[in-house]
Picture 1 (tube, rainbow over the protein chains, first blue to last red):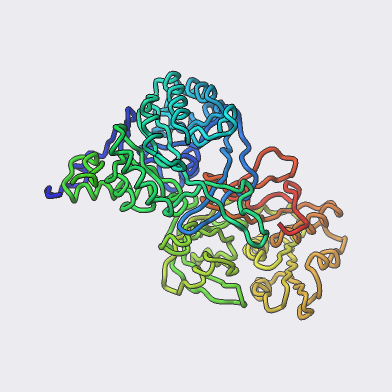
Picture 2: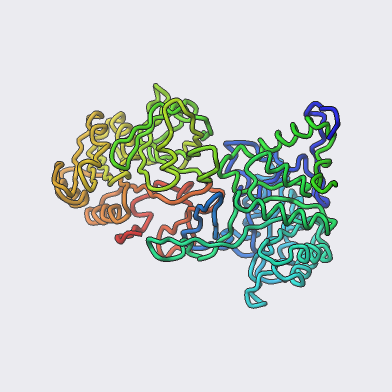
Length: 313
Length: 265
């Protein structure tokens, strides 16, 4: 990149992710940042491009029995089980504070059936302060015998289509990496009307407690996150960027500015930070500043110029 | 207000075969520290191990701006912590969690600690002493070589009785048996306990028998430490539908708020 360096404040950090307008490309991933107020002692969540709040279901859910988490090499497994107070409590108890703080809120929804996704989308459609919907499609479809929505292209098409027909908001399905052909899933989401794609959700894994001679997690399986999954996330985003013309919210193991740069270079228009926040609560702000400095040093007038840069021949 | 600071390691000394005592200069965190709270430490900057480690406040010196932590080396995180040297820095978040409360006026504070579970009770004893509560500490370990906190309690000037299985301390046997023995019946006791869950369950049983109140400090694996990830969930009572977050709703709970397991978990 031969451009002359710029002053960091001359870099346009804003991004538009399929209609989700953000002041910068850094979000916090669903389930790692609660409802935005948990980390208020460390930084102002309004500084973020967006806060993707904890996954919301129609009815309250107690979540899985413990142990729910276990540390693994360069990562962690979690099986929280979508503990949340339900969509009505989310709207009445958490949205007022998020609005008051001026946070760009992306709601994350999870349904047990196709119809529930539609109901959730409709319920959240005119709630002031919600800027977009992220779809957790790694939930079992109870009507289809528990098969995950996100692992079958036809079901991905249907769920995205159902949500799109019930909301005006930008719709961002979060793709599961636990599939053979991620491009087929991404294409199905595009056909269903997705405005952007979030990639990737956790990789399914497990751990064993040799003292108890049992799986460590009460749920047996859990979702692997953290630096361990970063190469998988980068590969999948790289593949999808080449084949599918939707903006990508990339994440999976980001713990540094450098990681975030890699995600943008393989094709992410914005990045989400999840497990990395547990390690360093200041990481999201460091990434915002670091991306801006990198762009300035390389003379990029807009952070968007980084997107997909690794694909150039 | 909890905060995050890069704390200077003043000392990090081995005090028994598996236990270490680390003093950190954390002047921004210290003013907010209450007994029963914990700090969340990033044991190194290599992301291996990845997650922070919660450690309860063993002691706090508000004048010097330091906190002291007592920890047992059990895995990757604590092994890494034990390798820190004086003059190095460690990233500390805190103070976090719900602290102990103080007993109703006129009651005796009885502190029952087992093993490394003694840690939060030292700073509690210091603060109780400052507030002029009568304090008695019952401190149990397997062997007398593990009574690493004994001198610190005695330096505080609080009555401390040690129970070990090897017969080389004040009392031979379980600290919970000692609890029944020391009962005078003349005073109302407010109990604080931290240690292995079966021990805390025995303390709760004792409290129930004599109609006493008190608090327990629980331990759980944690990721965020601030109530965001919901990883440290625990049911207070088996019949409860929902879970509490040990990091945010606890780690201190009322003695009757939580059902404790007599069998090791």
